[in-house]
Length: 239
Image 1 (cartoon, rainbow, N blue to C red):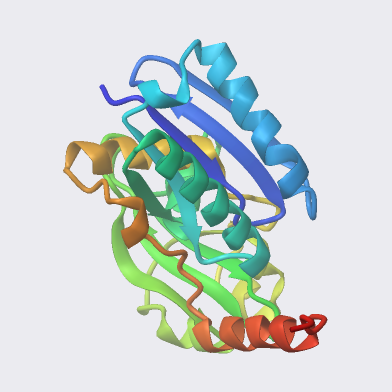
Image 2: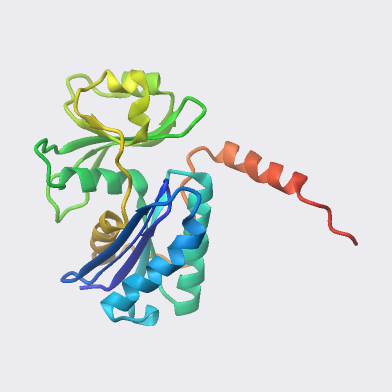
């Protein structure tokens, strides 16, 4: 099996995982605004415990979004540095798909195959996607693709009579919480689920060159405006 290192910085949580099919090692912390301080030490800890060097890996995987703009940029920067330095391919995984996979096969008294993941996107919107999870050895099937919408719009788009469990911070909105009694707000994406999905993608030949990979913002226009504000408010260089 492929030796894959995965990381996730797409939410307030920060996590790293390594898997080779037999061994699974991971670190997970809720570390809002501390990703830059915690990510590299966690990577070093996981690789040391696995007894493997970066260049012995087959690929690097990461939660590519949607999620926190800053978190995704931190994760992408780390992935680029590691992949370029060790000449490794990259496997981007949907943050929402990873959350759905993790909830579907978690130890719980509320098993579910259909998971509606929703993350609070601020501005009265959520990042959301609906997935069908059949078995731990197969990728979740997309029922409603990852999107950014108002909670009321999500409620209107879900097919009638669809049974599902909800996960993620987006379920704090009343328009979503009225759709089902089975939802969990305090659920974060985790690199251990990212690495499981990445192993399947690697077997399917889906690893990519790092220069071909970008984070998935969904709200691209807002992200662009934020970057423009940063540029225009930065001190001018003296020429």
